[in-house]
Length: 178
Length: 162
Image: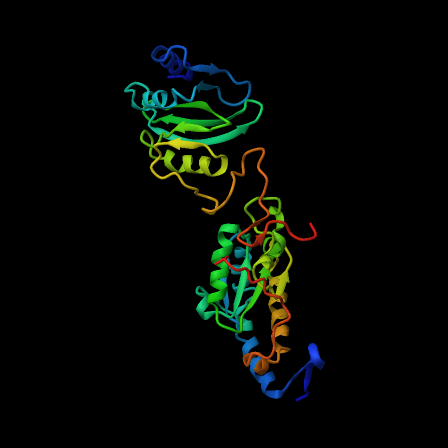
């Protein structure tokens, strides 16, 4: 199969056939942690439902971070909840991804002026994919999930597993949050 | 039974303490001072004839023009099928009121909410701590002169670019 060159520092990373196979396996079985705090959770449940099925992409929800690959932030995040979400994120095993679903998880959304709402999930978590919408329709969410699949299939996985490839998404690792 | 009858009984028992205000819109209410808050509420709840045994809700509002935080109680009596609204004002400089949790146990969480968001301290409350905001939050947000802190535990409170 054709070698794929992923752009990066020092000439980029080459994706070989083993990387390709491993990424294929990983992206078609992306278990997400069911983390719906507000209304986006309803659209998330519908996306898992029969009409636009997330399970046909191999994605199913897990209630615990220990068994999931992705943290799907669906809904408004408050400051009180943020420290708990960070704790859950750190309990997930590598390789892990974060998807921010809906306006509230992207930037605070409708409740941006509020005193108790965190103005976006990316202020304390490294978000890979942002899905706009209030709430995003199931088709939008499926597109977002397909985007994260495309992101995964381009990763040099072996290098990442050996710690030689860092994801370009910056992790705002806040000391003292957890 | 009507609200006027309740006010009559109140004024008979507590002369010159209870003030009755007829509202143009919404419900008419009684206002008492902070010192008499506990005794008037105890009478309303324990009186065999009035028997306001149900505290429907309790809330607070910051009125800078009155220089006070107004706390309002909505009461209901199942026996007489009568509702009643009573208010009191806590001074803005040092907001302190007696706790009603010994009279109506439901007041426990309502007073915790009023303490959390407005800063009113309730004397002899069994468990006065924040209920909605995190425990280490600084400030009481529903006051009119509240300003948001710069960051909470490292998370910035404004989004860069907004």
